[in-house]
Length: 314
Image (cartoon, rainbow, N blue to C red; front, side, top):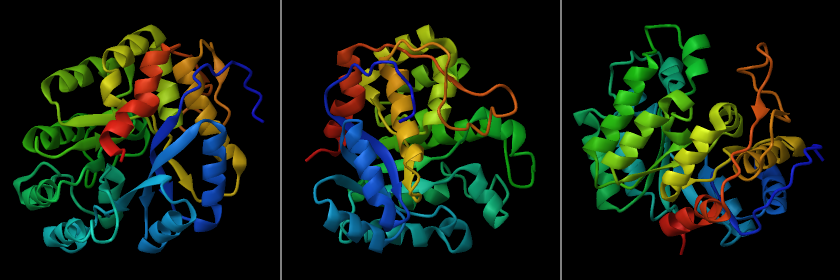
């Protein structure tokens, strides 16, 4: 459909470790396109209990279900509010918790960047509840370098990426008892940040990273394919394939573009293939291109399936 002719070489099962459901009416499209590209199971972040129940009924066994906990609750109510969300998670039928705690969330509620950081002692009851209930935690805390350059300029609400990554590392270091999935390659797919992320992997054993979103991973990891290939090969046991696809639109190309782009990045030897959808961060600077990493089949199998099955399989 998208005219990207490079061969997809991997033929095994795929687990998409980061998807969302917003609109139940289009979940079938996400499932259909995912299946076309080899996805047999997915981690589905549910933004309402009704969406969770719909997904469970329509696709039994297809999804590992994550409860979406708004990070703004800790600002608009208190820490007890997010602890209660954890305490009811299992009885509601979820397997893990997801929190969107990126800088934009502070901007929404007009909260200073130094208030209730995720690695602060005030948040300890939340992480203790996760540990007590043995609930894995999917955390999105920082964003692409491009966001800090173009979007996060108001110092009343936004800090630097350096400070946000220090906060993220603080979470990992302070809570070794919690099983963590750090969204978006722990916000460090930029090739200049891979060395530091490697130190995290070597230092801490309680976290994995996922590969959502497609445009961010393709854009950054493809800039230095040889370095990225070595990195993903070395840490293949800690990396999860993920698209960050959101079931919210009936547009087939939205889903198709993300699955195919990520698979081309990981499996192919593509060179300078245009990303088949718009990358807003590069639309004014020449666009984003796919440069394949040509990972081995054994590395692909870990990233595509084995790691997620180890973490979330039944």
